[in-house]
Image 1 (cartoon, one colour):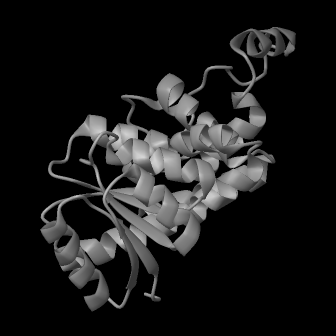
Image 2 (cartoon, one colour):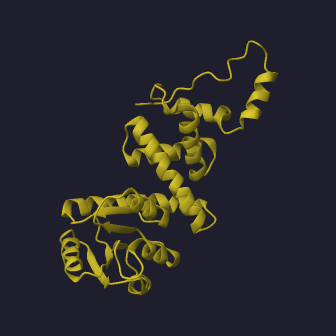
Image 3 (cartoon, helix red, strand yellow):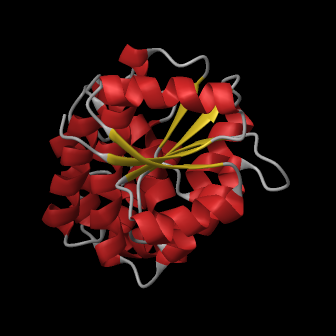
Length: 243
């Protein structure tokens, strides 16, 4: 892991100090320490850190809204520290553009792994952002991509990195943005594959998408009606992995 210029946002001095020690032990440089949103934004703009780690509990404005504020001025990978792993916190953090959450107290090995995950997701987000018209659209597309990755990870038993790679392949194959490609996977999961026991075959799913998965049901019925009686059934099951 390369050395990262890191900004720590934490109002509790002892926690901030311990986090600084662990970051430096991992080979990173802590370029600034902030206690609140104003300090975080000022430091992010003047010190140009490559990573921000903020506690979710900050005075007046919490760490998630602090992350959203920083990201509105500067795109940077952000990790949020939280005392417990709550679904609502993870959801809010993801919607704000946070790359990862880490439950405290911080373990050095877990900190290192979370930083790696945050950097990998940020790299993916940069690809999504290049296809979007603005930050709002980029965050919406990223939310779809993250959900689609989880579907592929569950259905194919692959890593997060591999799930994104396959999503990229699908995007290139059908000539769509990552966000639209992710939406297609989610729609397929919801409408066709939920609760079924089908073979693990992503290429077959992509072939089905190219044959018209994205078209409306009415358009599909119209095409079926125009085919001869020898045509294949319109609603034949499509292969897709299920566990």
